[in-house]
Amino acid sequence: MTNTNQQYDEVVDKCRELFLNKAKDYGTAWRILRLTSLTDQIYIKAQRIRSLQENETQKIQESQDSEFVGIINYSVMALIQIKLGISNQPDLSADEAIKYYDELIAQTKQLMMDKNHDYGEAWRDMRVSSLTDLILQKILRIKQIENNQGKTLVSEGIDANYQDMINYSVFALIHLSEK
Image (cartoon, rainbow, N blue to C red; front, side, top):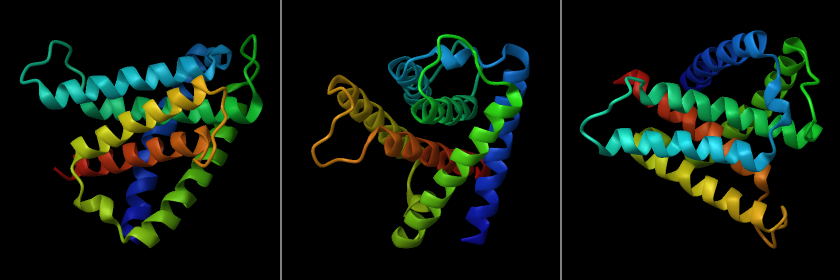
């Protein structure tokens, strides 16, 4: 599992660097986005990944990798929105945003480590296409929970689904880097 720990950190470091650089370029304009908007952005990215996996040709030369990075960073933004609430204007500096990023990624990584222990790294035997399908399923679950005004009867909440999408995306990026 130490290899998974290191690989996870390498993937997240690349995602974090992009998040921070975009925060420096654009500020934290994403703070105005409602969770439904972030969910839809993640849905677009996951659908594009699925299209890339199923279609023989592509017209825009961006890889699955960049889309999985986008899913990770949009999911972190959603977790920040859950933690802080939606703002009517950008209200975080890049430095403040990255502190929340680090905190939420640390929690998400711990969840991964706990599940990875219990499941015996089963994700290593999964296909990237299956991870993509699981992400799409999580998005549909989130949309249903959003339609229910955030209420669930017996299921985990929206935040757990965003964390799972981060972890599935990290796993996919690890698989893609090993090919």
